[in-house]
Amino acid sequence: MSVNVVTQLQVKSHNSPDETRRPDKTVVDIVTVGDYTVGRYTFEPGWTWADCIKPVVGTDTCQLNHVGYCVAGALDVETTDGGRISISAGDSYTIPPGHNARVVGDQPFQGIEFLSAAEFARPQ
Image 1 (cartoon, one colour):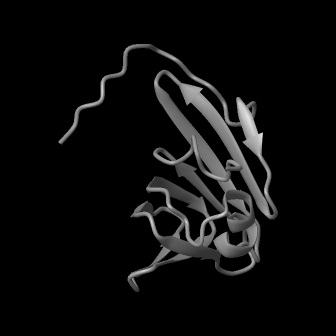
Image 2 (image 1 turned 180 degrees about the horizontal axis):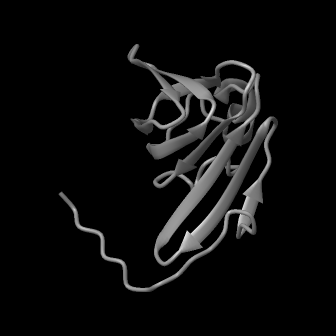
């Protein structure tokens, strides 16, 4: 197991992010604190990775690793090998590369991501 070391005291608000990415039905607010990039992802109802992010990144499935926490809404994720999970408010999650996802229901999904934020929804 790796050990991460924090070397500075710092705070930033996602309400004043360092960067915001806005693909279709998507808002990704990025802040960097110390050596870490943290993203707040908001996906509107009707959002799917294939419809909203694939055109930006140009891969058939999402190729990023995700570690995050769902603040609100719900997201279904399916991996290319047939694995499936449903994520809802209060859930922490990990998602390996090779997946697609979609918002479930009529509420936006909002998640905080700790691993993929530096790259997610960034044009290639």
